[in-house]
Every structure is written in structure tokens, then in C-alpha cells.
Image (tube, rainbow, N blue to C red; front, side, top):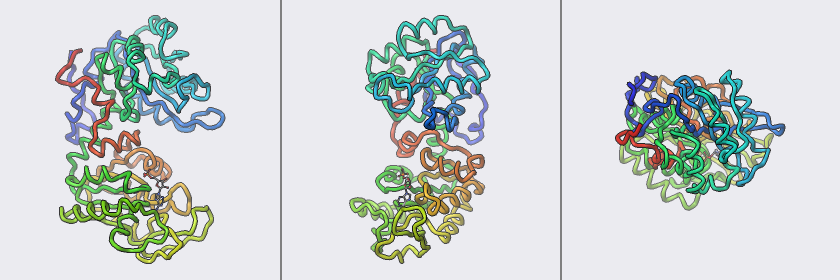
Length: 417
Ligand code: AMP
């Protein structure tokens, strides 16, 4: 039975209907066993203490909904790279404890993710109970999308829900194999990611600016090409800027340049220019001879980087230029840091742009991975409209490529609930 669509924040953005797959609220899950693939791949310190539980928190709307609807909630995730066999360093046991505290409710922890013992635990569950299965990657078959392993996972449940956006770019047994066997739907996090990274980006409120940074042009070329008929402005910072500047015939000292990307950079810049898209590059930068913390640094115009020095951050004039360029925008997408922000001396540019994005009167979307870390370190994450939880997956979506974990879910038109 299909329920009426709920009002959500995203309804106001006119991005309803972007997801052409079933979502969890299309399923009648009362009393049913629902296998929810989550991304609980959280960071730990040396004493196996969770240092950041935001990935667990991001799955809470879906988990709470399933509990409230009276489903028997089976949660499964990968954690780290245990190389296909049990390894206590990658156990999800500490995650079960944290989840219990966040839900304020008992969470059963299963010692494996398949097999008779797990089936026994699940058969004793009551409506609204929650079980967390042990790390899926204790089995090498998970990453191989093995058919038999997928069947064993599917055997545990009546429905499959994928809420692990961060793993949706991988075709594994728990993201693709199982989805081909069970009626499958997206969780709320997955839905929101698609609505923002696809819905907003494909149909932005204009002017729409994309800020791209990070190490290499080659890593962002797909995004640039996919966005070229959607954006009004492109602002390029980070290491990737210097391949563009070199392509314009200027010397950039020892700054990062991808020789095999120079022609591509030139072609893209011309194409954007011909399409009337404003293309901004750094006008000044913070340079150093080494990446060593404490090494001597200078601020110079981009066209005056001396031999033997490399640009490791955008400078204050660029921050001003970029901030002004962002001021009159209505939608901003940001992916990739403006400099080597991991080192204090080269972090100012990235943090200032984080502040400018946070201050803009615009719908702001931040890609996952490094940029997510940067806005958190800059202390402005609460002022960003949407921060993606997936690095690789968000990049793949921004390149206009299909996500296997999403493609495998049941089409809306084929509802079989
Ligand atoms: P990406 O994964 O391509 O988004 O690249 C992120 C990495 O780019 C970060 O670890 C930064 O330290 C690095 N990065 C940013 N700007 C520069 C730069 N100017 N030179 C070298 N590396 C940079």
C-alpha cells in the first residue's frame, strides 16, 4: 500500500520526484523484517573509541521511522578494511553501544552478519526491535557482490532499505546483490542526498556557483564537464588551479601541475568562457618551499610565484574576490579544499571560503570527504544547507554518473509492496 508523501524540507525546494525509486515510506513495514544497509564506517582512536559519530546520527531518521512503524529493524554496515575475515579492530560492537545510547533503546548485537545464529536472533525479534549485524566485510564475498552471500543476507529479511549513501557508488552484496532479490527502497538519508546532489544541482535556483578545489584537475574534470551547462560561475582553487594557470602560459614555480591535463584544462576554460560562464582563478596565493609546518611562507600574486616555491593556499585577495563573486548567488555547490588545509599555515583560504559559503544568502551544498571536514573545522557546518555524507558517491553523482547502489533499488513504477 502506498502512503501519502510526507511534507519535508526538500518539498519547499521543488525537488520532489527526483528519486524515481521506492523510498522507505512507500513500504508497509509493520511487523516485517527490514534489512537496512547503513554507513556506520565511523572513525576510531587507538583505544577503539569512536571519535565522530555523525554517520550514525545521519541514519537516525530512517531507523527511528522503522522502529515507530513497528518493523523488525536489521542494521548492517561495513567498517574499515578487515580484508575478508574477522578482526576485532574492525568490530561494530562499539557502534552498537553508541547506537543504543542514541536510540535510548536496547540494540541486539549479532556476532556475524549471516548464518544460523543470526537467523535465530532475528527470529526471536519483536516488532520495533533493533539488531546490528557484525561487519559485512568480515566476509570477502561482500565486496565481490557474491550471489550466494547476497542470498544469505536477503534470507534474513522481507524488505531491503539502502540508507548508506557513502557506499552507494560500490556494487557490493549488501548494496546491489541483496537489492536484486528483495523489494528495495531508499532510506531518508539516501533520498535527501539524491534530492540535493541531483535535484538541486540539475535544477538550481540561479545564479548558481560551483566552487571546485582539491589536489588535481583529473579528480574534478568529470564534475566540471557535467556542470558546464548548469552553472553561472565556476570558482577554482586548491592545487587544481595551477594546471589552469600553467595552461594560460604562466609560470607557477613548483606548484602542483598535471602536465597531461594542460590541454584539457585549456579546452574546458575556453568552453566555459564561450558559454558565458564566469570562470574565476586565484589572483594571489600563499607559497612555501616545503610543506613542513613552520616553513617560511609568503603571499604573492599568482603570476609572481618564484622558482623553487609552490602555492599551497589561496591568498587574501582571492578570498575577497571569491567571496564577492558568491555574494549575489542563490545556489552554491562546493567540492574540494582551497589549499593544504590540513596544515595550519595553508588553511586560512579554505576556512575563509567556508565562512563565505556559510554567510551567503544562498542554498549551499557541500560535497563530502575533505570539504565536509573543512566546514566542520571552520565551525560553520550548522550554517550550510546540506553537507553530503559521501565523498566518492557524491563526486560520482556530481559527474552525472549512475550509483549502482541506487540503480539497484526498486523503480517507483514497479512498486511491489
Ligand atoms: P581532492 O581529494 O582532490 O579533493 O584533494 C584534497 C587534497 O588536496 C587535500 O588533502 C589538500 O591538502 C590538497 N590540496 C589542496 N590544495 C593544494 C595545493 N595547492 N597543492 C597541493 N595540494 C593541495
